[in-house]
Amino acid sequence: MAKILDGKIVRDKIRDNLKFQISRQRRGSPTATNLKFKPKLVIIQIGDLPESNAYIRQKILFGERIGAIVVHLKLPKNTTQETINSQLSTLNSDTSVHGIIVQLPIPKHLDKDKIIEAIDPNKDVDGQTATNINTCLKIKITASSRQQQKVFSRYWGITKSQFTEKT
Image (cartoon, rainbow, N blue to C red):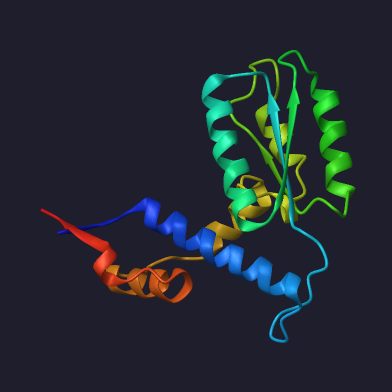
């Protein structure tokens, strides 16, 4: 029997955990590093696809709920590769920016791989740069279902009862 995990429960647990961590650090909790700033995410959108707008709205709401600053940088569909690379270079060097997402899909005249590789791997929220993908591939995940449940329980507070059996 397969185990099905309710994605909304996972999302909510992750959201609550992040919100707690950010607020605890901003309060100067003695058990946390003293975070004197709000984490800042920049979402770059090239063009104006309705589907992308919906995803971005959800990302902005999620960020706001956890106490992060989310900036939506909307570029026209005819933006050049050079303009995007320049923008990414600026964001990579901006110490107030902690994460970057390039919303996909992007217009066909642009080189998606070059754009993704222009993101600093330390700020690559989606984990799509070659550096981050290689890091993930080096980690061999061979956990059984029981071990996976332990991971979800330990890190996100998701209990076994929140997994359902599929027959």
